[in-house]
Each structure stands twice: as C-alpha cells, then as structure tokens.
Image 1 (spheres, rainbow, N blue to C red):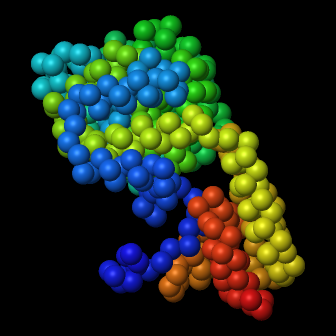
Image 2 (image 1 turned 90 degrees about the horizontal axis):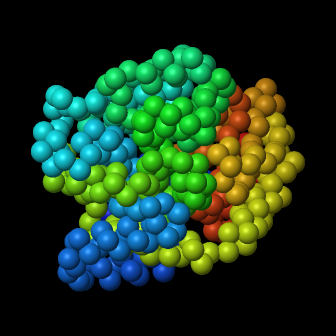
Length: 372
C-alpha cells in the first residue's frame, strides 16, 4: 500500500538519519512481523513487562529493564522513580513533590532541546532542574557543590553530540562523584542503543534509549538499569506515567529488536554503511564549491557519514540555502543540516537505499548547477 499516494503525503528521502521529526526508523521486517502479530492478540500486561525486563537485562548487562512510550517519557519516569522509590503513596502524590527529594542536577551544557527541553522532561515529574556550571564549563568544584545539597534526587547526564563538548565532566567521573554521595545517575542515551552495554557497564543507575532509532523498532523507550529503580519506573504507570505507558506493540517490538541486535553482525553492518558513504562520495565528486569528507559518528557509534563542505562564493549558495532547496518538492530530500550555519552538512545514508542515494545525489548536483 502506498500511503503517500493514498493520503497525499510527500515522499521523504531521509538523508538525515534516525530522527523523530521524520517519524523514526524504518522498522525491520523481523521486528515489524512481531509488532504486527501482537496487534491481533491479547496478553497479560505484567507478563509482557517481565519478558521485556529479562530481555533488556540479557541484551544490555543491566539488572533489569522496561519499555516506556519513548526516551523522553523514560527520562520523566526515571526522575520520578528516583523521587518516589517503590512507595505507591508517593507515586500517587506526584507531581506534588512535597516531602521528597526534588532537585535534579544536570550540567548546563547538557540542557539540550531534542524537540523538547530536557529540563522540561525533568520538571514534568515535579522535580526541579539544578544546572551546574556554565554553558561551556562545569568544573569538579561546581559539580560537587551541586551534589552536596540535601534535596538532590538524581543526576541526569546526556550522551549526545548536541551537548557542549568543551569543559564538561565526562560520564564516568559524574557517576563516581554522584555515587560517592549516594545519588543515582540517569543517562539520556536516546540515540545510543549501539552503546547500551557500554553505558550500563559505566555504572549508570538508569540508561534510557530509543527503540525506534538504530534498533529499528516501533516507537518506544528502553530503560535499563538497577532492578529497584526499574520497578519504581514501572510503578509510575499507576501515577503520572499512565499517559506515557507503552502498548503491546511497543513492548514486543522492543523485545524483537533487542533479540535481533543480539544476533546482528555489527562489523558487517558497519561495512555496509561505509560502502554507502563511498557511493555518496563517488557520486558527488568534482562539483565546484563542494568539498567532500567523512566524519565518524561523534558519539562513538560504529558508522560514519559523508560530509559536504560548501564554499558559498564558488557554489553560489550557502549550506543553509542548499538544505532548503533540497527540501523543496516531492520527494523532499532532508539532509542532516545541524552545522549548516558553519558551512557544512552531512548526508546520512543509513536509512537510504542505493536508489535513494542516487536520487539524493542527483538532486544535489541539479541544485548546484551540475548536470544530473
């Protein structure tokens, strides 16, 4: 069924990557089959949660895990769990935090907006974000000072290239300092599912990742971590988490995705991404004003992207102009343009077939005045 034709929607050539604003990942057939079948059956929800907990624990090395509506929901519910523990009375009380620890420490350079300010995800639990340091620096002294408060419920760390990369305190250091004071650490690893084992092994108390990015599942958030805190996250479904609960297709989709990941040949997957990047470079070489390169994933995930540097004086347009021109029409070609104001963009080929790579590169040549 062609949904674009049926509903009059533009086709998307996704050269941007695993992005929520492009409706998540293409769900792999092995995962789509499980999610689709789940829609035709009933289950005891507690048994689904138990299955997810065992699967997440096995796949990540964590004590336990659960599935939420998305990573953002997982952050809110993780913060709430650190505030209430397994006290159902406190769960019912939120978002009123009276009598509970309510401050959540976060480095100021981690206060990102991923479609919603992360500080708002914290506040939704009834907590209060405490920003440590300045936008480009958080010293040990500043972080230690923030952690000393008697009212601190948790620390939130963001593992993302969107954070400020200069002058921050790295995750292992934050975990050591927080644990020395008995404070749990929550990691927002939305696009870091390829690093889940690494982040759990670092000692984080809760690690939250998206099921619908590199795991290629239905929309959901995977929470991995301490068994008591995971139980407290699930308990929020009887309180503020009721509107953030995961359905059967999200839970079983995440289970199927993690099972697929366990058997996946990651080196072969990386080699395929490298091949697609080389194809992009071969199709775009020789365009005046366009210098090509390759950038590794800044978060340490095992793949790279094609980098397009635009010399506006030669090309006749800026990187931002090119981004906007490519997005026009049907199909729309959506580039990874986080750095367009700095004069470059990326072509992320992970979600592209070879035919779509050809189409995207032809459009780039056409816009820049070269024959397709």
